[in-house]
Length: 324
Image 1: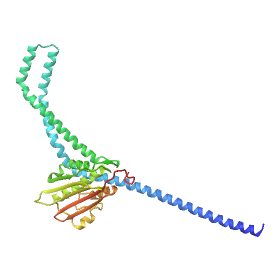
Image 2 (image 1 turned 135 degrees about the vertical axis):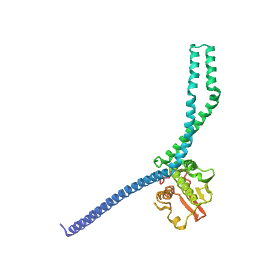
Image 3 (image 1 turned 90 degrees about the vertical axis):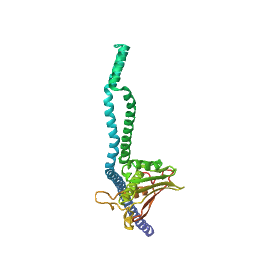
Image 4 (image 1 turned 90 degrees about the horizontal axis):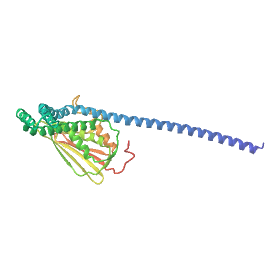
């Protein structure tokens, strides 16, 4: 073997060894990046699941706050439904007697004269005219009361039921209407004024946005209740421009100092007494807005009230970054 051939072979082997080493290093780095990426995906999924769980826990805590008011809202229609049914139960023997007489006449077991005699006697004993006048009203009132109870329960279920974070084209005004109905009893201590323009449909999670309204309204109500000798006033304003939908909730309550405003979105931060607040309401509001690529602005001054302004971009086509 010539010296040139020998030198070439040595150089080739050195180059091959270096190439093999680089390929092995590249493979190790690729494997490490793949494992790191898998770990990040697992942690991201875990964070998403924890956020869903956290939002559901806050819903349950809010439902605890609403429970007394909801019980009152259900008891009112339930009371007159029960009373009406008692009245109808009182009419039952007369109604059965009337149908029995009618059936006997149809079966020809009594004559027309006998039927007339039985009906006259029944009318004197039970005042059929009164029953006819009252029965229709009793049934209508009972139906209305049951519809009210069904609506209250439906609003509760819509708020409490875990959602799959489904995004769809929707009108945000629906969330406001649902929140007002859900909080009807809690907000009785305040005058509520709603001002809303025609809003465009936007791609959003309506269930999550419902939590924005519920938390903002409950906070406004709490702030108003802290001010004595003053009627609480809450104004909800919904409007839009070419790019955004704006949700404004303002009140004439106690207001907040700069420290509270700076910490209000921190999880578990609350100014309410122990047992009255979870400290998660505004953190949930912030996260929902963030998921919708939105933002929130706060204007507040002690003893002068607070304005919360949520800004949601109008999304007309599904955005993969918003889909869950």
